[in-house]
Length: 349
Image 1 (spheres, one colour):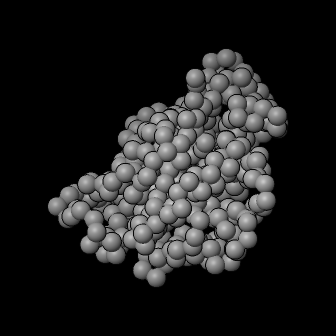
Image 2: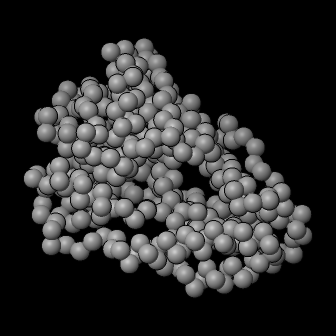
Image 3: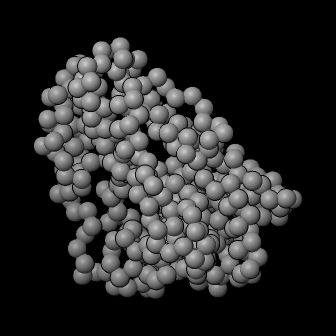
């Protein structure tokens, strides 16, 4: 294999992918190495997509990461390579994971190693779990780096869930070590939004059919996202689509009042939170007596355009902190908009 580092990324949002590439482009490439990027569009399953890219790339090291992960430590590739050199049996590494298998069906609550930043759109957060270099049992799939190839289990699993735990176990069962490097300052921002659990239980059952023999018995535990939750989530998504249209018909206050009646976070998604944040911006601009041609939506004819503008402002604010030499241009928005988007999406130290 060539001294190359391949970034393998499933893409379904070009705005996020473009920003992801911006931070990849700022990384310091270790001497003697080259990097390449494999964007995977239109994938039906993350297992299939990752397997396909793995087979196509001749890179010695492969990084499988989400399109909404932004690498803010320019020297992280050097540190990762040094870690692999220190641990000859290391087969896979990540930036967040767990030192043991979860005893609870809610695997997403089991992480206890690593140090990353994140953003749910409601607020930014810092998962400062354990900063030192540590051996793990399972890793979170936001960022995975491998030194040797192990097949992704597309032969028995499909979809978009549990692939990271599956792959961790595949390396573990082959005798390879799983590591998380020391991160005294976070290397990554995971702009993950709200966790979608609508298919969690179904995907977990498929996963347990393959790996249940080496995991705790979860059979007596309740479902994480039962069918009545799924029904309410579907209704909320239908309401959201109506709200997205109504704000462009001038019914801003009416939509805001309706959203307050449906505030249960189990039944909303990332787009719903962004919609709520935009409404908050519009209300603040109204209190400051800004005219319509000065407001956040002055050049937007649809929610899609408003969403893209919101993202551009958020990314610009983030670049001001983590990429001061290449901040780019911020869309023309009010100071109230910048302040509120920053409040919901940026950590304040």
